[in-house]
Image 1 (cartoon, one colour):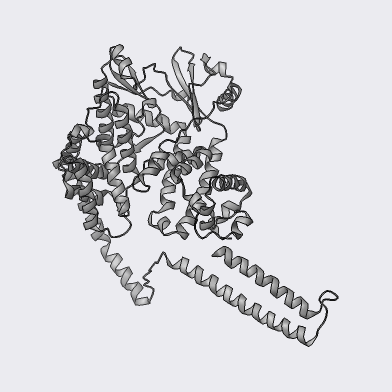
Image 2 (cartoon, helix red, strand yellow; image 1 turned 180 degrees about the horizontal axis):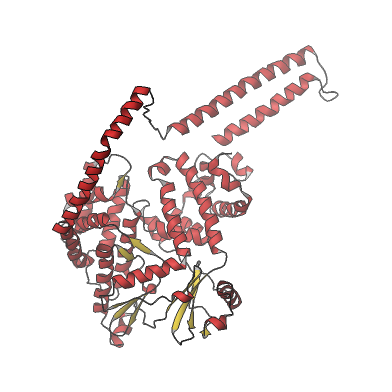
Length: 558
């Protein structure tokens, strides 16, 4: 049994793994299980010759992929929502279907909620809160939200993590890690796109969502970064009541951002609100490098003074200074319709899995640019256009880093949110000054001086260690201990195939010998097989049985 399959055979995971297989097979994805030779496939499916999926199995694939992920629960719903932003990995029809995945589940009974709070704080619920509403305001797969009142009269919202969801997600992640290793080992695309690496990033972000203290810290960082903007409000975190499983935030009563007419009737300015929201998100991405990555209407509210309240801080993104500069270069190139600048931007931001065809890549970018040529900036959706660029990059096997993808997702969501409020607002026009600010900072004399000092210190340190390193290399060469390693990632797979073939060949030769020996013994000592068992019959029968098993094994492997 290979190490990559170890967890799948562990009893703790086996039941859940069988559930996943059942959902896949029920929805017509048995051919995927067969192709990957995953353990646990029913015998009748393994004996069936399935060289390629049938027409029925290939019909409506995007919808069925989304349905499978929805049936499999919170881990897979989150995975689908993440993949819905990866235009560099999936075709557009898959992105559209995965974007429809909803994370809504029935709320927990009030008795379970009260029991969880008592377990967490060691006191009855009426000793913690002056009031607690048992009916949930909202419910999702990881947690649900209730209104409550603190002893001092402060209105708060209490977010509670569902019992057992953390364990279920960890089991699912371990199963996915096993499957990812198999996919990477057995498929070329798995190796090209570093499936295990992407899954590791997904694992980290999902496990962070399970820890509500991290969400509280995210809220505080955003509050600090946005404190100079009088039109953005971040609720206060009440740390005395916050744990890994319970988050308590200030309750802010606001209006929904989705209905423009209602906002106008109530005296709000929808265009000003949209402008403020765009300014806020663009600043978070390009200046702070720490941003709310899911600014959809359900995570926003409007309060008097045309102030925007951000809600739900479980999903945030990070862009380091280098990536912010690269993203700024790309936005400026898009605004100027600079094809060569866009090409350089893609190559600087993306991770190429092979030497790209620059002529073909430039041609595809030029074709996309013609789609937007002459179009007013107010009509260009920057998030969508960058997603389309990521699709072009995907066709040329250039993969975007996950942090950049998160920023693009935030922009796409933002454009959808402001469309009802002020459809004529251009993210390109608003983002351009921020991008120029990032570029100007690149040439700030104080920053350049700091970089020069750092480089000089690193160079001096390198020169100081150079004689010792040279002496060590020379000594290894002199003693014959100098080794150059060459790694071929395709070699282990080829070796396994060769080893398997040699095993089959050796076994076939042994079986041939047994069959010949049995035939000779039978002809020299004729006896009735049904009356008594002589050595000849035993050898002959064993050889036939083993031959049959060998044939089945070879068919399954093929």
